[in-house]
Length: 270
Image 1: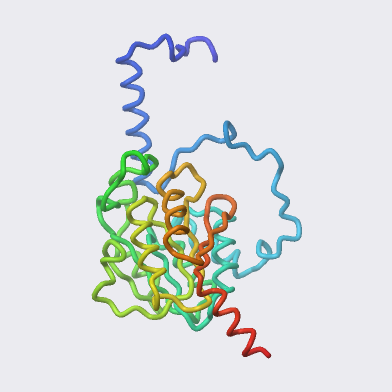
Image 2: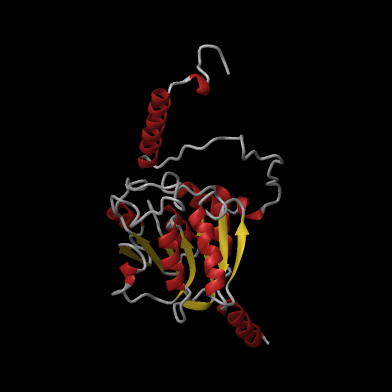
């Protein structure tokens, strides 16, 4: 530590409290502008460089174009965008795709670019509070109003001329009176324990998804305790469902119907 900067143990309790307050204010201002304050290196260094040589998706001009198109509209990084792109194309092409928790719409637009002939269902509360409720123990990474710097109308504008349904409100209550198409791919990015639990219970209920369907859950294994707790509970509650971690912070949820769909597809191919 350089001279002139007091060590933490030399600070008074009041100075420490003021410092924490200013840090929190700064983090909230960044969050409202669509940014997140994160340490580089430290506990989470990339000890071995990621070898991008020959990674085909990175050279895909459509993928590149889509990533440029959503600049400023999404907090998703390149690896997570690549996971969405590749996995969506593995699912039933006759089914719609959905993004639940869209923020500024970038992730949903990316999926629409990936499979332009498939309908999109885009769900978000578009509310000042951002979240319906937070568990102080499980949802420590998030706070009310964290993603309030967005609105429904700008997201609607992104999808003009595309096959898309924009649904406002907290999912799944928001779709109680809505006739949804059969869905085969979902990007679930609602961050907090209660919202993820309700969303997955709704989606994994019989008749909601096509046979060959996948769900990608964001913020898994990223110090978001609520996300990991829901995954453990879902595995116990929905027999046959499987979950696999994806680098750098997602989970792939494979419904039990996937194997049924794969079996049917094999018979048809034969």
